[in-house]
Image 1 (cartoon, rainbow, N blue to C red):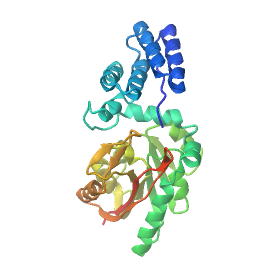
Image 2 (image 1 turned 30 degrees about the horizontal axis):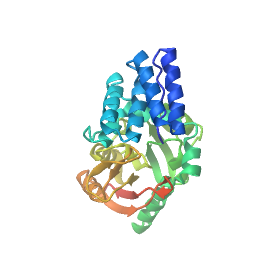
Image 3 (image 1 turned 30 degrees about the vertical axis):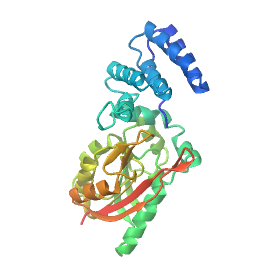
Image 4 (image 1 turned 180 degrees about the vertical axis):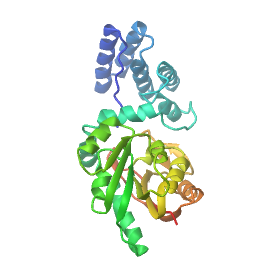
Amino acid sequence: MPLRLFLTSGDLMADRRFEFARDLQLKGDLPAAADLIEQALELAPGFTSAWFTLGEIRAQLGQRDKAIVAFREAWRSDPDDQHGAGLHLMRLGDAHLSEMPKAYVQALFDQYAPRFEHTLVNDLDYRGPSLIFKAVVAARVAARKPALFKRAVDLGCGTGLAAAAFARQVDHFIGIDLSPGMIKQARATNLYAELEVADMIDGLRGKADASANLVIAADAFVYLSDLAPVLTEARRVLASGGVLAFTLETHDGGGIILGEGLRYAHSAEYVRSAIARAGLKLLTLEPGSPRIENNEPVRGLVIVADKT
């Protein structure tokens, strides 16, 4: 999901040149688009959206050094980095791997909230919630325990797809999402007893010890680099015997990388180690593709762990 955020420059002429340039970019006339954006930047040197789009175009043209300059300017002009210029700098090898800016994640999902569910289910064959549901049920059957939970926390709840998958298994659902737009969509489902706008880790920190029996995160941890903080908080919030289940994207190497889709991919080795360090017991770690992207299944992992 590319972010098409537009922050006005405050100069009408610069804004018009920028919009014309984006049309040319979509039509594939990249040199002409770059020329128009540079004209816009002459009129408005601090035009964040223009710098960011120029970085995209330079990268598309294979002009790495020029792309880096443009993305640096986009980041400098908007320290909150709503466009995610820092992520592109990571991909270009000009910045160290770090956590995603919250402003970027919030802007991304606020923008897509009205059509998010339709796009995921119909265009991307999204199946993260069903993968988690099947894995949790299988793990509980293997442990000879019922797949029924009094209180569950849905991290990065989005529009409520995961809550819909677990609706018959959970008495009291709490949804947490950084995007107010997503929370609005989730509220309309009437699946949640509680909803809050918060970062996943901050949301968990606001919950009492041993207050949940299930914590799920469908396609949400892909926006986190280091999983240690969220796993530690999840363990604290889970009651004894409680279950944590989530999906991730993965890769062949070790550790963590930022993928082409600007989401983090975690190796299976990293996940095993992170689960153990958090004091959780790994029950399931199996391959499972959460979605289709560019007509190919995205490589993923389905993880279930519990608090013994």
